[in-house]
Amino acid sequence: MMSAAINNQGFPISTVLLFAIDDDFTIYFAARSDSYKARALGVDSKISMSVWKYREMLIQMSGVTSMLSGEELGRVLDMLAESVGVLGDFWPPILRIEGGEYQVFKVKLGWLRALDLSINLIKDDESTFTEFLFHE
Image (cartoon, rainbow, N blue to C red):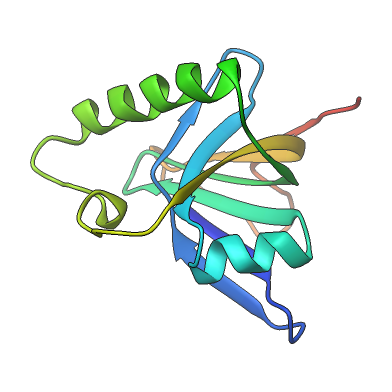
């Protein structure tokens, strides 16, 4: 997944995320505490994300992050570890970076839209996205 956040100078930054998602469409990810991503989310908790799989799907979404702690943290770390197992030979960069402390974030989605890329029919006069709005 690609994510984008606003850094402390007001510029967008984009990064790759290892993520997990639960049945309520809540997204979780981890970042090193001293990373651009974690520092940017410390300034502004809003985030935008995209997931793309060639000739299958594109999902775009946006939401607000919060940091996890306590019992929920252990459950989410297990979910993130399980999500690595479906990646085959690919090991996300976060698993290769040594040292530093990590923060685990929770994303409450505000909106999500999905595009089916398995069909080769996109017309300019109408949107082919399926959209979902999430309300608190």
